Image (cartoon, rainbow, N blue to C red; front, side, top):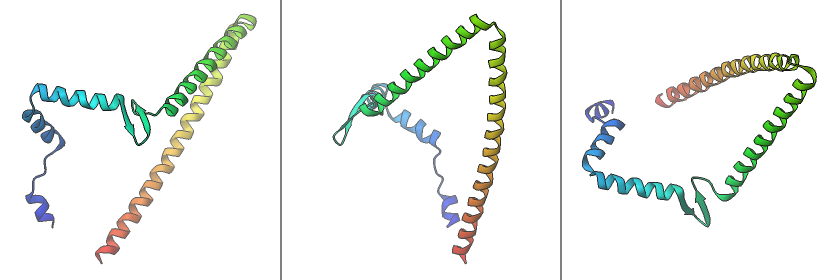
Length: 137
């Protein structure tokens, strides 16, 4: 079966893309692009309108999230500015120190999580290899 795969030369994605571009004229490519853009901007899936890949509820949640993020950032800036005016720049250096400690701890947690993820992937890969070996027997 591997000989059959070797005999058939499969096209890479780039080769297929180049052939497709060679077959279509600029006008045809523009028409396809226009149609794809039109579908992406608005289409219906069942009874739901989809705008730029999201329905209205998802857009509402996104806008609410960004509004909350803006309010949090504004309040945080106002609090830091107030502390700086009342207590001096030592407050900002203190905040910076705490922030850098947080970043260092976050980096350690991400590193340890990545190590666990790699171990889990290797375990899954070994189990798959074992299952493939069992099927061949």
